Length: 425
Image (cartoon, rainbow, N blue to C red):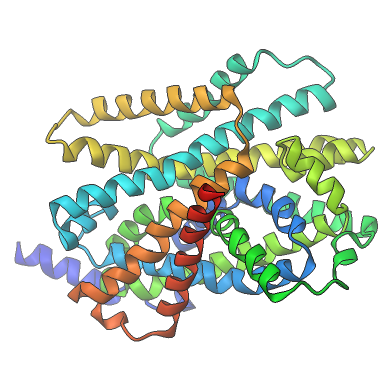
């Protein structure tokens, strides 16, 4: 036993904690985090952000990196503060007790599960629009199409977590190239778009109100919290005492990549389309890529844009399934039941399939779901819970007193109060 412990300690002691020995596994996780974040939220961000006007979009762009990095670093540190091998539901119970653990596990599930519903709707709409407008064939009944698409993604899920992460990281490469190509392609088509609102300096109250309601969509658009638990567990297993430093380095690179790519894409879209066209895309419940495919009389864009959207949404669905299934399994186990692992996996997959299929068939407003379900509920887990833990949990006391804690807390409160306001009006 001592030899085994010494071997483990030796592995951790020799594990590099600097970027001079960046590994292939680090790159895989960096791209996996990127792949989880870039999905339906990103493809709807140009629509929602563009409708707010030029100046709110500029301010949101400046907030994107610190808001994303500090929040996800806080959640990663929270998971790392638990025992070896503990996922987020175990760490919550360890720090806050059984009752609080059950409550947070419930919130964790409801913070992520609606995202799967959003992706189910977006995926069905994207494929249906592609078949109708680009292939010029009548799509099958919506219920049939949704069932086939979701069942196909769940078939990938059955291959296991490591396969999902590797699949997403592989899908990121062509996606980055395609998204960059599309953003560059739009440059000659820039006609000012949102710049028409740049000369109109909004009143402070109107500006704050626009930012207030846009923050939840921004939170959702750059969110990859569902995969953070699995990411932190793997980092602790790989790097031991150096897990905090290495995970922060991976997060920083992933966030720089996603913010740079997403903001270039967003500005390219809003400089091409007028506010009226953005409003039309919102009314049609389509992603910006599907709208662009229908807008341009260009065969390449007409076929490429929906395919890019399909890949983006599909890989984000896979990444978010990890978190949603983790939360649902945690809820089942906290009821005192102990089904076999395979039975629990099958029950989880069946539940996800049925609910996602029903919602995709009903086709609710995607942006409405993001504003009222996705962003604010995610904020409570991603922004507020780790900051509360820093204040209360001894294992996280070393992170107290940092200015980033105040910033993350403020963003989380803004997102949640926006939900309350949207429900009241």
